[in-house]
Length: 127
Figure (spheres, rainbow, N blue to C red):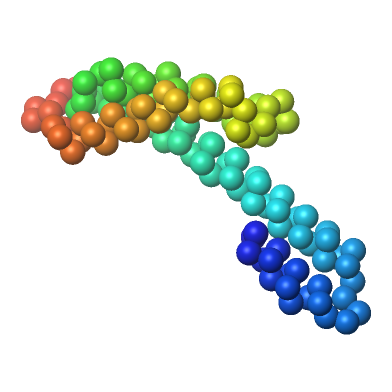
C-alpha cells in the first residue's frame, strides 16, 4: 500500500485536473491500511502462534518444558501490548510494546535452535 501511495503521487498528481483532495484521502487510507496490517500481522499472529504451539509443545513434552513456558508467558504479554496499541493506549514501537515482545522472541528463537540441534524427544509422552 505504501508503493501505491508513491504511484499516486507520481502518476496522478502530475496529471492536469487531478482532484488533489481525493488523492490525499486515498493516500491517507492506504497508509492506514499499512499501519493496521502491521499491528495485526506481526503483533497479533505471533501471540496466537505462541498460545497454540506452546500449549501443544507443553502438553506433548516433545521439547523441554521451559521452552514452551516462555511462549505461554510471552503470548499474553504480547496480546496485551497489541490490544493496547489497537485501542491507542500505546504506540507500536513504545518501550512497553518492545518489552512485551522479548519473551515471544526468546520462545521462537529457543524452539528453532532446539529443533535444529536436538530435534524432538524420541519417545514423547502422548497420553
